[in-house]
Image (cartoon, rainbow, N blue to C red; front, top):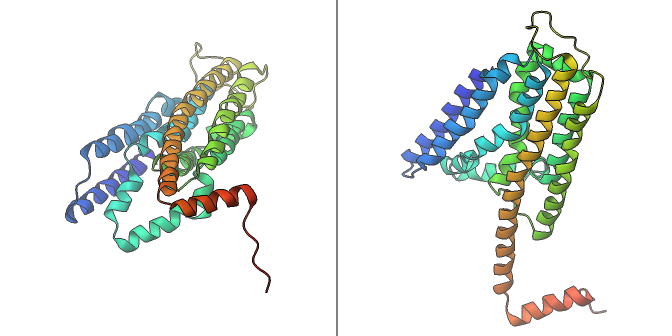
Length: 282
């Protein structure tokens, strides 16, 4: 499944680059390199490396794999600016459809720090239940997670990374506050995994594992350590991106005020202080 995703994603991206070239434009080579080498490369490393091979047998490998697919791999893919490429490769109708999608309630819901706080915490909380054991030992569920988890991460990361939706400074301030709250919330599942004296996913140790591999409880403790670390480190780029968006939004709002005449600015100030004028009685 992971190989199919990589081939399809790489082909779609390169087709977009070719369409931009045929239209007389030029797509930056470094963006293509970031998408293929960093974005798809990180996805391949997580899927085919140690984490992918040992995911079904070790809790820490499964937990780390899912956490990376949710928060790290999407951020790496976003570095290749796939939304900007899609916009550049589309015609007028295609760009209009893309704008409608980005302005939809679903994208606006997923593409802000408020939803990211809840969704990532919800995913990480699943590690505290027997559902984690079922997902880890089921090949079909493992394949589904390979696709669904990165897609969820992309829905959260791409609108923020591409600055696809216009936000006011107040809204971004709220996002900032929630992003800091997320630093605490995301840590809770990892801490619980680390300090709980019982095995939470209720999957016994596989008999075929080497004798020197960690016990189920130690395996769970390692999973908690890694989950805690990844969840906290992954929030740093989001805070940086939100800071950039905040600065851009502040500049946009400052320009809109500069374009007002003295009379318009005075009326806006009066309405802010006293409220809108009542309509005259007839």
